[in-house]
Length: 236
Image (tube, rainbow, N blue to C red; front, side, top):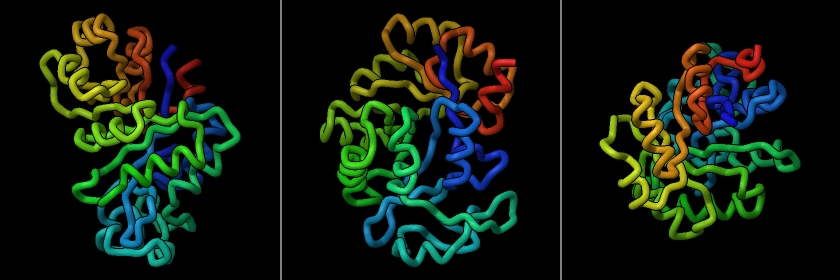
């Protein structure tokens, strides 16, 4: 059965990657959320999409140049307007859902070559504060995914890929990931069928058209990540 994940929470209505957007995703019966993580100057894992603060907050500059306490002086923007929401830590997100059976796709925006030891800290937090079976770690940095698997082979990982790969299952098996995370526009019927034959499950991003989503559901895609659609809308 296909699951529907809210991209950065319910980001079409609330500040992206905010606690409010994540709570509202759960309240609207989404199967899970997708979020993005970075590391502060003092080693805290925080949730924000961009490396820079300028677009998503009323601050400016690289997240990695600030301590967590300094980041808390900034506020998230929503459609250009400053809100009362602040950049959350990953632990704060875990705290919302720790007693719920709710899945979280954590995208590591850059691995250890940018954020030293982010994989070790991420896995420590997952094991201490959340249910491991409800976590997927994804990244465009596949070195980071390999490191995650080397630290804890039980963690589910997904390789984010923008381009159309030839026979992607061969590559994905070589780095021991659990899921293929392609841009939905690269999906063809043949690719979906061959991935299934090779036991590669597809979690695709970012689909905001209800007809496309319903078509992908018919093709038994594992997870569909969307910006705009509530799960309830797709069932009507």
